[in-house]
Image (cartoon, rainbow, N blue to C red):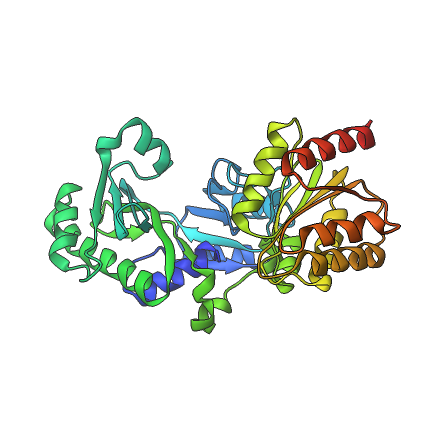
Length: 390
């Protein structure tokens, strides 16, 4: 689960991490008052969306007068922000963060994540803040500081001090850095975080270390332990179909292709999508219906796929392990009847009672194609979808 910058900074402040003075607004009428309350003569207007690269998309605007702030707010409110991390539809802007300007001396990067190779919580730090950390890592890897926390221990202040020294921070800033990094680590552990980062983490001319931005991603599987974090969820920033799918225990991600996929098992779903691509097609979605496939769940899956405007055909690929293929076939037929599908459908069944399941489908009056071989099923649906699109 993602949260907004202003929410991340709220958690930062609870852990003694310094952030700029800022006011969240949701209407134009609040803009000038926010500037007056903040004081100063320079402000930054920042769109609150669940995506990085906001500056590149025009979602972070530096303003040198209240009139410029009002113009920026008017320009952003009610629009959709497209960044390098969004699709071409962008994300809706309904809230803006107005922040006081800072006298920036240096820009650093600081983040924590789980490194699956080392199986450790890993700290990443760099003197190249404000840039894409992935680009820094690929082009100048020597500028990335990495420190893995002992999984049987904890992060120590001495470890933080060592990283501060590697970042060439003077003593007073080094002390603030220790507080900042220990605070991030505490949030990471206590809130079941999967990624937390400050980019940039700035030093100012008046000798302060401040989190100018903030990003936190949480482990969805642990949210049941954190009602306070779940309360921060903004569903307006999420895909409506994906939210609807999750309510029916479906894992669904929209894509740009023309062939809808319905598969049980994430690995099998990925392999199915690869095979479609290999034979000249393009998947319109990732959809894992899970191991306990039911008629109701299959019906909802078909419904979601059919609502994608670009879908020209559907490939169903089910491996019956715990669930019998003949029961799955009955569920598919029931779902097709309930949803009223009018797209070419190819169904491939394998596993327990696969032959019986395929016979049920073949003997039905439904306009479907069956295949026992996955490769043949992929070839068939690619051909049918191209015919339907012609």
